[in-house]
Image (cartoon, rainbow, N blue to C red):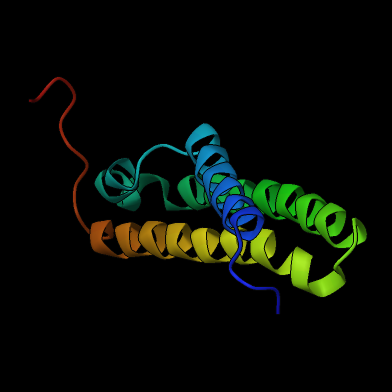
Length: 112
């Protein structure tokens, strides 16, 4: 495995940021998922799955390109690790929100 050099750290950070950005672009917040879990669980998780798929494709391209630029597996590891770790944390957060909100009534329209 490559040493924790500056390029590796940047690749990890960019991959993690990209994953957060994709989830942010395709999903509402985990709070919204929890609030509306009983009414729209399938729809809410559909977009989590679509976000995960998009992030996986983009991170896969990043890892492949990093690995093909010399260094092989050691270079591909950090972008893959950043994306996989962040994607797993996001998935867990949304899954938790979904379970926490099941059986609860959604908030009344206009109530603050």
